[in-house]
Length: 238
Image (cartoon, rainbow, N blue to C red; front, side, top):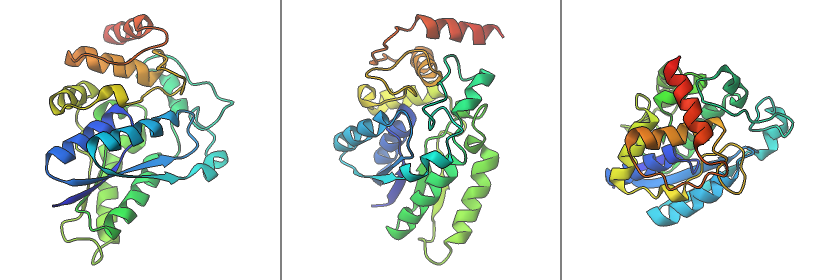
């Protein structure tokens, strides 16, 4: 059975990716990261999903560097997580420096060591606007570098994959619905409260994805979805 080492946060994108590779016949290893993020609750979701999927899971502790990458609202308690749609310029404050490169580098080391054919991440087209490390221009050279950097040590067909890099979050929601992904176990909210806030960028994007995909959203939102609907309408009218 082929192996896939997956950078998995516990959010709907990466969890859908895990179910996708499982459906393709891969033995999947879920690798999560604690980098001191405000919404570390996502890692609890990751552990629950791993049980449901019957997958191996490891959480890598990078929290020691939190004070060194504290320029993001996700890693600094002093910076407020903004409300609104991801398309807003204010969402730049949620960028964690070099986050995907760090995660993919470690996941690649693990994948090479365990003989995985694939190391994958759940980045998608909706991330491109705000996050430069979610764009093809970043990912494609990284794949080339990591393949070359592990030549002779990785399996012969080793590669990085980002199966959703040209897909929308609505596409992901529809695929996940088809695959039976337990979205009620996933966590998106950047504020990390008891339930999803319904106002931050990830909550608005999550609400929009389910609506566009016409898939039932099992998520409880602390503030309902009215704010998100207003933000979605504003984006549509721009």
